[in-house]
Length: 313
Ligand SMILES: [Zn+2]
Image (cartoon, rainbow, N blue to C red; front, top):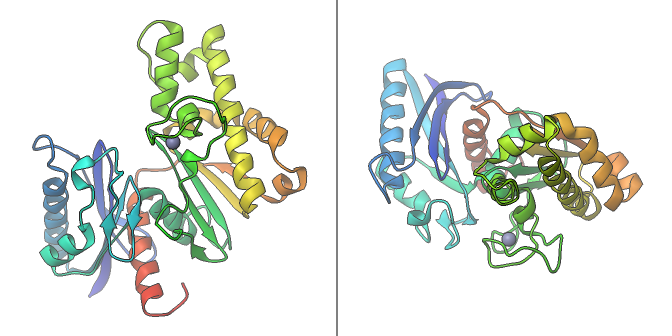
């Protein structure tokens, strides 16, 4: 019987889950609004998706051997315990999600920060395959990071390793959702670009619209996009100078909008980073397909199973 795992991306807006083969191929992909049954129902949505995927696996004659879940917050991955600061799915704060799911489905379950999970997926199955060190910076509603160094995911002592959205790039800058000030996230997340755009353009716009208007020559929008590139350049320099990874991947909706501005981002990064460090780190803007995050969940199962049995992945 073919063995598969279930990979899950549990986001603030949608939950994606799929059956993933050992080579990373996504066999089935399901998606639901996170709170399809009303406020506070993320767990119910997740369990329902998992039940349906189990059913699909049975009907296809494949065996599910584990579940890997990425969530938008810090996680004690050893215990599968979600931190208290999960801003986008607050109903899961401080819950032992891995144990809950493992007991419910009688399968090994692992939980980690969503961008750690994405980094594992890209490292095992995607753009980072074969690299020894890889950093993913995901620019979406929020900004998160995932760090793989010397073939190991760097989670940090308290699960904060990779929180690159909250490195301060402006010490007296904008207040941030995390309680800090001048964080990279406060300048380059989709939410913040949209808010800044709405304020300065004096009408409600989202981040994608700000980029579109800039492309069409709107002076104010161009100014905002210029600031986004500069802030991102400073943030990337933190990564390049601090870690000098083999590969630095930018992912998420904002990375997609930045694709035509790749050159500007590089120039701005060059203003802050060591020239030779930057020359030895490959920077790529990832336009992900929707399977990428689900593959990440599967990579987490494989990585953790190997790590806990003492095998190096
Ligand atoms: Zn912050």
